[in-house]
Length: 225
Ligand SMILES: [Mg+2]
Image 1 (cartoon, rainbow, N blue to C red):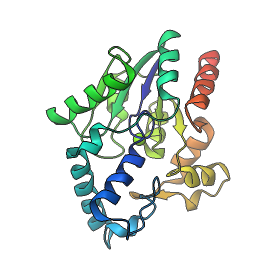
Image 2 (image 1 turned 90 degrees about the vertical axis):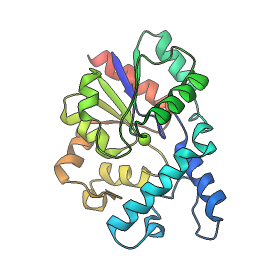
Image 3 (image 1 turned 120 degrees about the horizontal axis):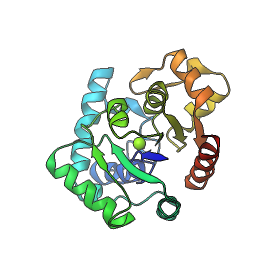
């Protein structure tokens, strides 16, 4: 089984590092708490376009900073990656962190330093952005995508792949709304989701609230193949 892993907030605790960087850069008076900066979307400006623009600028500053190369691994991820490799799964990384040569180099080195030289078959870096993984997932011939983005998970399911939605403090209320049939309440900084997309996630995605649950979800998927 070919497993494709998102990097930010699946392998690496990027939300936490972003929040630390925000506090170090701007001070704490804007009240950005670890893991919930995305839900405090109004700090980035007034309209959607202004917020996206400022958010993108902030991300680029973060990526150029030392914080980016020092992001910690997500809890239990190092052990589980090792176990999955030992069990014979093929693991690749698909990340929308930016795809300049400098960013690719930093991310490859970072992942090697944490997970070892040969943990991942491929590490594919896409342009900084959201909802752009479908084509690359097909090229990697991934059987399953593990991602904390509801959009990426929905897109993966649409291609016919399986998907595990990785639950974090930033997406947990949206995930709870999906599985409690409160679909109109679910949105992110890109706007609301179509009901069809959320129904697909509800019916087809596995949800994991950490790496131990990812292991359980993958075993179940493997058995059903
Ligand atoms: Mg992510």
